[in-house]
Length: 405
Image (tube, rainbow, N blue to C red; front, top):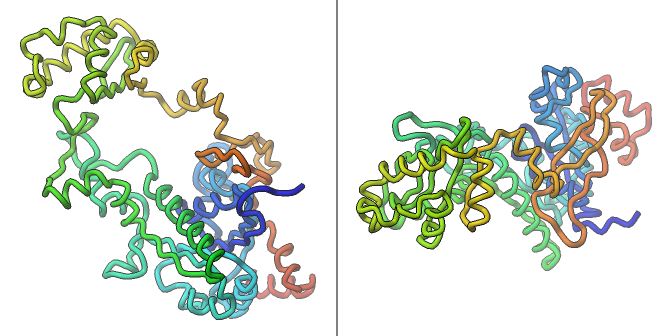
């Protein structure tokens, strides 16, 4: 079958582990790239044992964290610390379009596999390094993960209630954000290659990704000398109605009525058309001064219905609002089911249950993301890949006995 996806024919070597780097490689794989995950001979990707332990997924090296970003890829085990493993990697890189890695800064150079080494073999190679702090600067060799970057970027100081201490978010936002940044950097470099014929190096920093993703606050600090503080669920402007409110039956509703036209529609929608006439709320300044009293009036009005009911009522009034859903509730929502952002890969024999994996969060009218194969077992394709490099069965067995694969 002819593959019309944009990266069909692109070969990617992904020395990728944990979340950010495998996620970047997965985005390329969803759009047709042939992605080979290079995994360590001893343990492989640490995400293989993360998630689904109550069902025994980890026993097969197929933890749910690994399943989330590994479909469409092939897995090869390779000891890159050995001279034989390094020689095999060079052979593969000579015919590859992309190398993406997230080892500690300097590791690939130590193996003789840095961009400057491989570009001599393949001038068209795009080489991407994704690390916590980038390839330069005093923290370039410091290990990092999503939570460390949340702390280092200042986001953790802004997350949580004013009364509490710094709090991390409930999702790996900078892992995934950095994965998207790496994928975009690679795509940009590939596009540049179509013009110049030359590959290049892409240096992705999780810290810089975090600062860019917090751009509005960062801009306020850089350009206006702001000192941001934790606000919980409240908007920055005290006069805005942007907060989480308790509703009937213990449910909660996020209302985002930041503009005056939205607020004018809000009051009759919640059955309180009298609020704008209250002397405490006549002007934005008065509303900001008496915001606690205003929130109390809103909370009282919302007690007569559940958050789900209010969500529909406010949507009809063109007011942004959402019930605060659990993740299972969000996944079961009719809108998510209608959009189908996940692909059912069927039953993976080792797990014995049907598995769903995420697609790309955007749609293309032509050549969009598609899942063709389930997440692979560790080293599942090692022999197949080596055979394309002219290793026969005896040679492959010799490499295995020597601990190279």
